[in-house]
Structure formats: structure tokens, C-alpha cells
Length: 113
Ligand SMILES: [Zn+2]
Image (cartoon, rainbow, N blue to C red; front, side, top):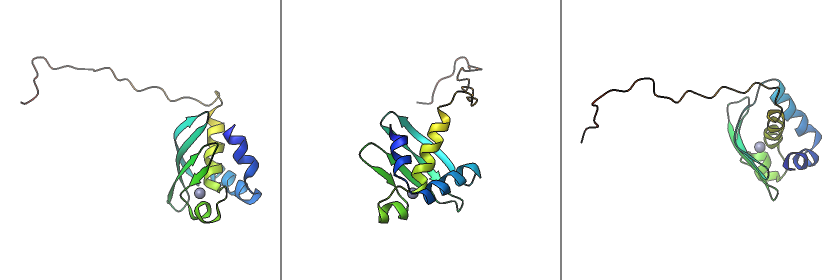
């Protein structure tokens, strides 16, 4: 599994920072893809800088300097993984789906040619 692989690789200090970022609400995280062998999203840190993260079995990518220069698993990747794990649990309330039905319809309406 992707998540356990990342959590096994990351250094303790980065694991701590990622956990703090999530728990303190400093990170704002958007998951854009969550599949068995692919996890992608954006992680915005406390300074408002947003980083793109993409995790596959072959590679852990993040656009931050820590990841790009040191080629290590950074706190953003870990934060994304941790959030994905938390989202798997059903006790968290799902948002209700938006109502996509048309409420009103105009008769005899035509689009301009
Ligand atoms: Zn990063």
C-alpha cells in the first residue's frame, strides 16, 4: 500500500511536522486523486505556499525544495498520505451531494443564434 510505504520511509522529524500541520490546521490539503496505486493533491502550508504532490509506487513527487533538492519524502507527501488514511474511515460525515435537478425551466426559450 502507498501510504504505509511513505510512512515507513519518512524521517521522524518530517513525520512530526506533517502530523502537527494536520492537527494544528496549518496545512490546507486538497486530494485530487485517490486510487489504489496513485495519490495526488495539493498541500498548502502555513505560509500560504501551495505544493503539488503525486505519489505512485515508483515515485514520491512534491514540488517543494525539500523534495526536489534532497530527494527525500517531505512533510507534504506525508500530510497528504495521513489525510487520505483519515478520509477512509466512515465515521467522518460525508458531505451531501448537491442537488443537480433544475428547479425552474423557461418555456419557449431559445439560445440566440
Ligand atoms: Zn514537499
